[in-house]
Length: 349
Image (cartoon, rainbow, N blue to C red):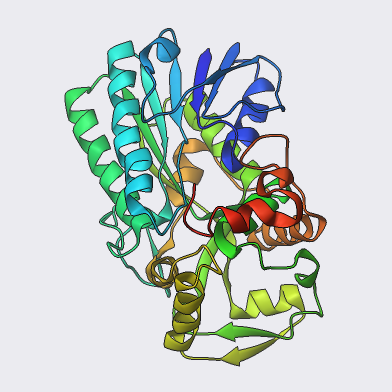
């Protein structure tokens, strides 16, 4: 089996390439990325290509499965940049998959594609995927779901799998995720039990987390099996203020969501934090997912709890962990994070 992984150098991509390299069913892997990594894995060759401009068909010819992971979270201040990469780039990937005659496509969707939903019960894959339109990330994930709907109508013989995970963490992704969502002003050493005195609790603070190694196993099963359709992915327990307070050794303080949002909006508007207030709104409105279909039809069970995934991420944050790929490298932000500051927080990819 030959697998082409588009977007192979990020949080999920590096984990997936490692898993595929260890799978005897997989004979060769082509990792596609905008920038070549220093890191590599067995059975893997690399191609440098941008999904918005490159001719992807030659890269996909002869593949048994194409995996589409490429996605930009930033810049939140320039939504046309993320739209071109995430939506128009995905359309180009899907068209190339059809033109190259690839028999299977596995796509990285997200809980963020779902319409607002309940926090006190779980929804399955039939929940509507219209997203939260005010947040670019959610709007783009929902739009790509519609692109896939059209793709499946036109290409009924192509097996399509959509994986919709919750928030994904591992130690090596800590520096990247700090850079993408928290910004250069967050001191790594601060994020440890006992140093953060309080955790704010506000309506909607319930979300699902899983470890990147568990996500990669779901991808591996989707690639090597015969599953079709969407699958929710998450680990237990659902994370809220109580779980965060326990991890950080902090006490819970009830606060209004509007106050937290106002502070985030001010920081984002001043260029101090990269995460937009619309992402905060999205997190408060995404539903809690039921993962029963993935367990039954993929044979997938997470090995790590959500709290273990968060603990590993926090440890990686304190250590400044990363990998030798451009998205994950601690050096990407420059010495003393100067490149993050000079290129504009939330203004550059």
